[in-house]
Length: 127
Image (cartoon, rainbow, N blue to C red; front, side):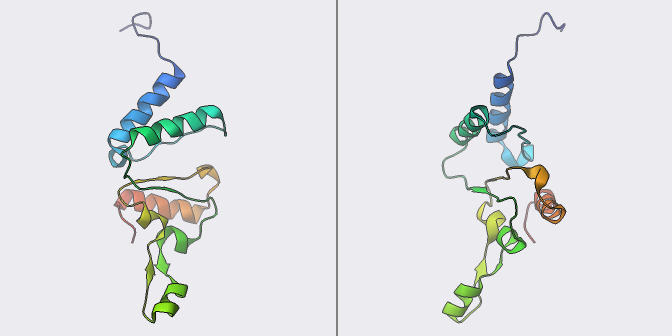
């Protein structure tokens, strides 16, 4: 097919297609790298994605400077002291199990956090 025979594609049309493909199989896609400064277009794309995903699908936002304990889970000290037995905190990745996570400004995340996220993504589980 030559360039003259190809239908016109808009940037928004391609972005919407990516959102649709990701919504069909988030785990199979392995993620989406959305490079956009804060803007109405970015907000519109994220809203479209939320509309396309099943309503019960867990979605968590990961803060840029998240601690290992909050990301991966661990001992919930306050709950453990109240209960008198060990109480685990699932962490953001555990809370998002079977769903999606959003990491704004991923390029600024620490190397150790990036490694933990990459490991969870590759293994499909949090160890």
